Image (cartoon, rainbow, N blue to C red; front, side, top):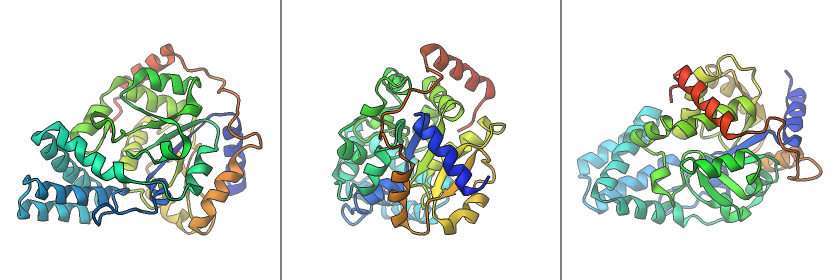
Length: 318
C-alpha cells in the first residue's frame, strides 16, 4: 500500500471517529521544550530514571555503588535493563513510604510546564479518542481535559463509548497524580497486564479502532511503547495492518525493520523534518474539526466483557 493510499484510509477512519490517537514521549518533549528538572530531562524515560537515581541517593536509599549500577542500566538503554532500573527505583521509594514515591513524581513530572502548544493542539484536533503513554499532564494543560487512567474502569468505558471522549485524555500507563496507576517497573507492569478491564480495553482498541502513534519515532525503545508492541505481537498476529506509527521519511526503512515482528503496525512518514509533523496532523483533521459520528460498533459493558474473556483465552503476554 503506497503512502497516499495509507493517508487516504487514515483520513477516512479519523473522519468516522474510529481513531485512537496515542501520544508518545515526543509529544511531551515538544510541549515542554524538553524541560530539565534539576539538570534532568524528566519528560523522557531515561531522564526521569536518572533523576530517580539521584533522588535515591539524596534520601539515603542508594549507595554510590548501587547508584553506579543503576546508571549503567539506564545508559545501556535496553528495555529489560531500563525496566529493571525502574523497578529498583520505584520499589525503594515505595518501601520508604508511598508518600516518597508520590512526592518524587510530583517534584519531577509535576514540574513540567507547557511551553509550546503547536503539536499538542494538532494532536487534540483529531476526532476520536485521545490517549497517551506519558505520565505527565501536559495534554490536559493544553486542552483543559481531565485525565482518566486505566484504573478507572467506568470512566474508561464512558470514553470508549463516545460519551466523554472529547473531555478526557486516557493515560494507558498511568498519571503522576495517581501513583498507583503509574506503570514504571516490572511489578506495576504486571499489575496492568493482569488487570481484566485494562486488557479488554487494549483488545478493543486494536480490534475495533485504528491506532495512530504520534511522537514515538525517537522513543520506539521507550518501555511503555515496547510493551504495547510486545502485547500486539501475539494478540494481533492475524489482524490486517491498519494501525500507524508516524515517523520521518528517513526513518521508514529502520522502522520497517524494528516493527517486523508487529505487522499490524505500519510506519507512515509525515515529512522530512520534525517541523512537518504538526502541519501533517492538521491536514488529517476533517474540515468540521473534532465533531465526528460515533463509531458504528457501539462499545458496551457486554462488549468489554467479551473482549476481556477473549484476551484471557489468547493468553496475551505483556
